[in-house]
Image (cartoon, rainbow, N blue to C red; front, side, top):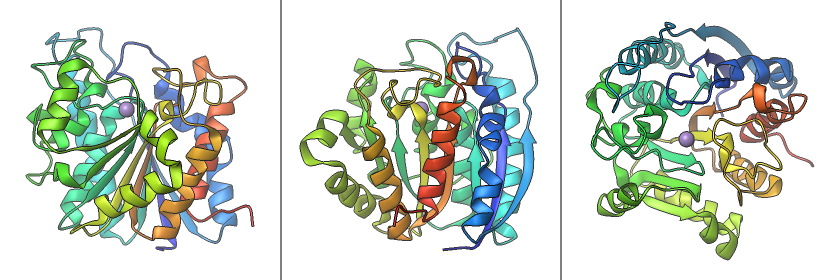
Amino acid sequence: MNKNINIIGIQMDLGAVRKGVDMGPSAIRHAGLLFNIKALGFNVKDMGDVVPAVTVDEGNPKLRYEKEINEANDRLFSLVDISYRTGNFPIILGGDHCIAAGSISASLNNHKNVGVIWMDAHGDFNDEKITPSGNMHGMPLSALCGLGPDSMVGSTDKRVNPKNVVIVGARSLDPEEKIKLKENGVNVFSISDVHTMGMAETMNQAIRIASEGTDGIHLSFDMDALDPSEAPGVGTPVPNGLTLREAFIACEMLSKSEKLIAIDLVETNPLLDEKNRTGILAKELILACLGSTNY
Ligand SMILES: [Mn+2]
């Protein structure tokens, strides 16, 4: 794979009610991310963080903090875009999951077609019409597929084909969101599917689906895909999640596929964590995606 890596942080927590995921990039860096990536034989350059504006005026209750989120995502888009244009492989540290609207927009801008593997307890497929909360971290995947909110993906005209999107580990989907996912042909491997088929078979199918007719896979990894007993420091914990081994199998298989073009690692919340356990785990999962193995 590309031996030149860029790290880009975004201290975003406006997409969710619970605060603290803005400190995620720092927690993952303090786990030794740059040092460990370098030790794997990569050149690594840290491009620093995007810092969103701070406000207490949430604006539209169906799209809370829309203006500030989109403005920060525009800046993230520019950094990820520069990373691609200078021949690097971007790794984006969140931040809540709404940052994927900015990062994946930049992937779309630099590739003809992009497949997406979305590791998550949630679908993030709501929009301004069906959202139960108005929290924008529940909407980026819908926006990227061209299904709203459009303002969230204003940096590019290109969209992801839902047929090349795979959600893995889902177990907390809203009723209308489920219908919308089915209607639009998004591939969802719920936690039940993972446990029935096994993670290896799940990822075989996920990588095939996300690669079909695309130039590569943008992995968007939400730490809440994991079980809270393994990853307690996350924005929105949901019981019955992926085991450590399942998460590592997914990342190791993505590395071996050589299809990855970018990685988002999101929703690490140091306020809820235990001695940076989740930050360290996030770092280890990134390393596994880059080819780190036990043997
Ligand atoms: Mn998410």
